[in-house]
Image (cartoon, rainbow, N blue to C red; front, side):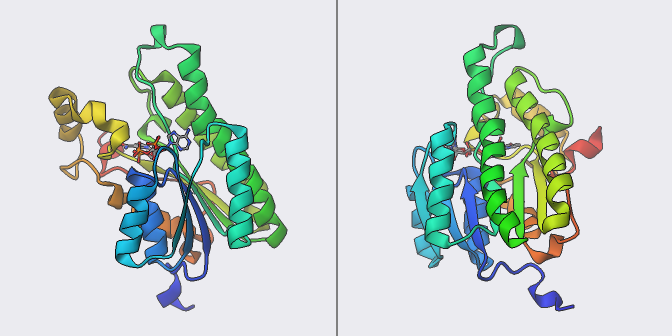
Length: 254
Ligand SMILES: NC(=O)c1ccc[n+]([C@@H]2O[C@H](COP(=O)([O-])OP(=O)(O)OC[C@H]3O[C@@H](n4cnc5c(N)ncnc54)[C@H](OP(=O)(O)O)[C@@H]3O)[C@@H](O)[C@H]2O)c1
């Protein structure tokens, strides 16, 4: 076994969503540094990712789309297959959250969160999966959450969507594991991104969470890159339907 290339993504074609900021941006840049050709999909903007990639001389194609819509998902997969010829790795990182108490959580908020976090996560997996199945090779990575394992507060649609990711990942792994496709998820702990800005801005919440993280700090987007490269590379060829927790030990506290 050639251990030196276990984590290489050389010549892999990778599609990364949510790549305009936070965890998705870190993963897109990380994949490119590991040798992949990356299509980085942003939403409102992808400029910062493009600038960071250029500064490092990385091979990244950028595009924006609204992935909460079926047409957005279909057009991005079409574009990926046209520009890259195939997709070896899909990291579906796009996600959104709505914070309101459950008794006031509107159906609009529920639908918006479910559309992006779960419905489109499934559709993109299905479309990319069809291409991967035709070639008998592929790595699909979804993003779960601490709220895949525990109930949240004031984020009922988000918690439901991230619990749904566990069912999606395990079922796809069951169906496709024997056909060369690895489907797994990463469950980040508390990471400093736009998604958690409301918690970071509330000193009480920020410090209460911090006091329960054995690593002694909130996570940075870059903390997820190693796990993502592992799940995208040959190193994880016998890892199927797993939810890899990267949380500084938060769940271990119980
Ligand atoms: N931060 C955490 O502590 C944490 C913990 C567990 C799981 N996660 C998950 O990690 C993933 C990345 O989140 P993050 O923390 O890195 O926060 P983030 O920086 O806000 O990233 C979310 C990304 O999703 C994109 N997005 C939102 N709506 C979209 C749409 N309709 N179409 C396409 N893309 C859309 C956003 O683009 P725009 O900003 O341009 O709209 C943004 O780039 C999410 O799935 C999130 O649920 C985060």
